[in-house]
Length: 158
Image (cartoon, rainbow, N blue to C red; front, side, top):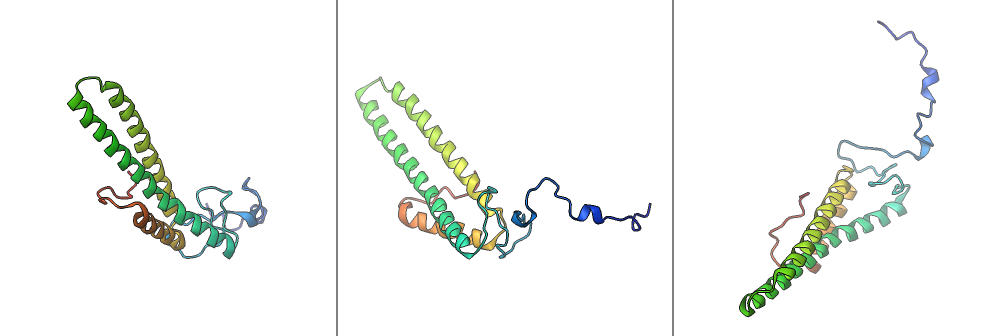
C-alpha cells in the first residue's frame, strides 16, 4: 500500500513524551567526537557546552582512576588476610571466623570492582571519542598512582 500521499505533518511536531525536544540526549551507535546533546549514563549528566564537557571529562578521569584505587585496596586486603592466615596456621586452629569474615569482605570488594568496571564500560559505550579518551587517561593516572603491583587483572568489564 502506497502511503506517500498521506499527510504526516501532524506527526512532525508531536512530543512523544520525551520532554523538551531541545534538551534531548543524543544516543550514538557509531564513534563520534561530537559532544552535542551528549548525556553520560544519566539524563541529568547532560553536556550542554564546552565548560560542562571539560568538567565531565575531568570527572571521568577521576572516576576511572578511582577504579585502580579500589583494585589496590582489594589487593592490600587480600595480602593482609593471607598474612593473618599464615600466622594462624602456625598458632593452630581458630581461624575460621577470620576466614569467613575475610571471604565476605573479599566478595564485597570483588562485587564493587565488577560494578565499577561495568560503570566504566557504560562510559565507554557513549561511543564518544572525548569520553573514551578520558577513560584511557583515567586508567593511566590511576595505574600511575595506585598500580604499584602487577597488572594481571585488566580494566575489562568482568
